[in-house]
Amino acid sequence: MQRVSTGVSKLDKMLGGGFIQGRTYLITGETGAGKTILALQFLRDGLLRNEPCVYVSLDERVGNVLTGAETLGWNFWPYVKSGLFYPFEIRLEAAEVRKYGKESKAFIEAIRKVTRGGPISRIVLDPVSALAMGAKEEFYVREYLREVITYLEEVCNATTLLITDIPTGSAGLSRFGYEEFLASGVIVMGITRLDGRLVRTLYVRKMRWSQMDPTIYTFDIQSDFGIVIKQPLDALIGKSTKSKIKADEDEEE
Ligand SMILES: Nc1ncnc2c1ncn2[C@@H]1O[C@H](COP(=O)(O)OP(=O)(O)OP(=O)(O)O)[C@@H](O)[C@H]1O
Ligand SMILES: [Mg+2]
Image (cartoon, rainbow, N blue to C red; front, side, top):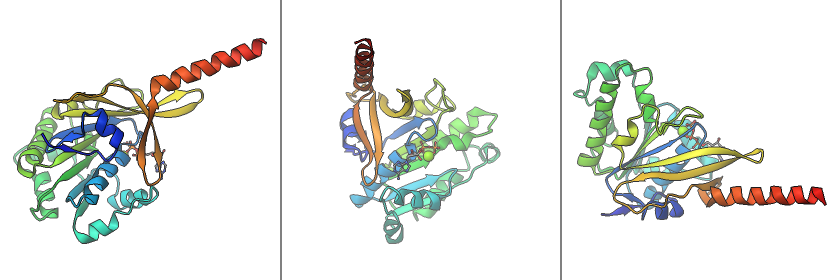
């Protein structure tokens, strides 16, 4: 099985060598967790290897995303101009998904149109949860998403990232509870409070056919590098407990 880099070398190791080429993965986490940044880092890695990449924005204006990426020192515009990178927006109302059902393939057609039927190596749908907002009948959305994924995997042979947000404080892995079953692997990003500050965390929750590292790691977001994985959360908690004990002892003296 051929592996595809996530763009974060430590994460590749955690996944047992990276994503499996042509499969679909879920990046999940609360708002502001860093999901879009990880997705852009994955696409950037592909673009640097001259692979055609697609970014489908389902809620934010795509221009804002690319301009935002500049704050990290990432300039996607030359790739857009040269025709290697296809960023675009799709706004689908739940009612439309229902009306067209899985037969319409409107979503797939939109992707084909934008890429003019050319090859796609990596694709990001950000966030897929926007597809199903307000949908009463989950069945239609699930079947719809399944059709899209099957097309991307079987026809395009693209490595796909589905981004999904989860409500703050939720114990679930995805907004609707079925996105994770459609994916070959799940990466969970989060923000935890520790000693009066927020610590970013990331772990691999599932990785089919791979020996994965189940450790919860901390990470930073840095200019140029993007997601930079640091020490395990446990080590940080251990340090903070030790420093607390030391502070208590100092106080007692
Ligand atoms: N240039 C930057 N340098 C450092 N950190 C940044 C930079 N730009 C954004 N961030 C951090 O990244 C966070 C947003 O990351 P991102 O947009 O990937 O989150 P997200 O998980 O996609 O959120 P949402 O679900 O709302 O779309 C910001 O809250 C900020 O803390
Ligand atoms: Mg986002």
